[in-house]
Length: 309
Length: 268
Image (cartoon, rainbow over all chains, first blue to last red; front, side, top):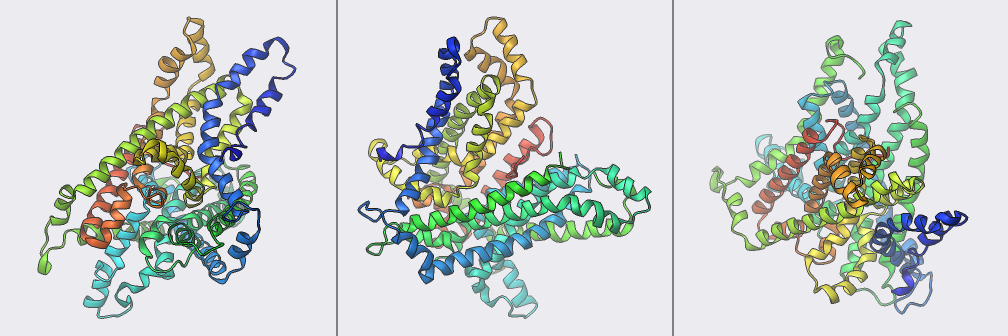
């Protein structure tokens, strides 16, 4: 494990470079940077080191010999490719649905009183549902759409329809799509509300005083200004669904339709001989996809911040 | 703000209400369903048996205590790590600010499921020293709360003039420790409180890492309980969600600047 502590010294050269040429003040400079050491050591040990273990491990076999076999298996074997594709599909669909529904909700909230109780309640509830829900949301949906859920019973017994199939759909990909969309909506609200707040009333008045209709404002002013923020939010929602694990783990107990559940399977089950590090290879795949999304997000964000302060 | 409340045209007003009712209704539906589900008794009666059972399940009580202990350790660790570092970068090494910010936001790009793959071997190693206590989860939870805590504390530091306050303290003869403890910290207590509350909410909801490292925290026990007694696990889930909601709502009212202090994933 000692050979994996590589990212830590990486901080030192930078600190050293900054102090070089400072002449007499050099010792105090060093002390100035030394005060940051605990933070860098901690992040190095508990964030960079595990990430490095994943990346290095994905390139080794069980006995530590370098190989690309894990990556080959993770990105060519059918069940893993399927899981990646399903995860991407699930994230795309729920990000789109969440962005549209959540965007509308954000607009409805943004046009209300900025200091009103409605806004505070909706924002606080959204924070909880979007970020701390996890396992609890799985149970919330069992109580709603499960075999004995309130919605299932209402539709089947009161309306006499058999649309919910005794709640069996909930444990598959459809169920995941519905539950994921549920937590994407509040995340969209949190992410998109500041952008809507950034739309200034003067722009609306300027548009109106030039004879612009409501449609003309949204088409020529509001829409173009919000478009980058909307796209950025879409990417964040995608990442959010793609990384989600807890809800799916609590809901799906058989099989591993999506990539995070495949990683669970790789971590918890007996591994096939020679595939000990395939889980790490899948994790690397996730890092790559999320990194691409994050780079796109950063590019869009640069554009979005032009108008929104 | 876009349109003033008084001047909103009628169709817009109707659309706004329809959206609020439909979307908020959908968001609230599962919560109502949990309340209904967890209070079911025999033959259509209602009782609180599932809620009472929360208090009489020793595993559940243990897990709640464990999770609260982990939360407390996480808050202490996070504050000790972030507050001095962020204040110091602001005062003495502004060029490192972006680096610290980047590292704090990095956990957003490395999902917990990826982190646990790399941290599992480290915990196997750690457990031989620390006896495999669930409290060791605080180490990795500090990392998970970094993005949220960073934003909250950064908000606090931005709302005051740190260099001037520090200079004032130093010129009156206070050392750095005293400046930190008696000048900076009291002035950013709103941000510190927000960071602490978000950390508690996140730790109480954390499932991925705890379950895959086989520690019995609140979420892990709720998930296990679901296979045995769905009514009790639905009741605990609702209780935990309400608890988290009250915590987050408290920040919205306590934190300086009021609104937009809620947890944000968004960049800048």
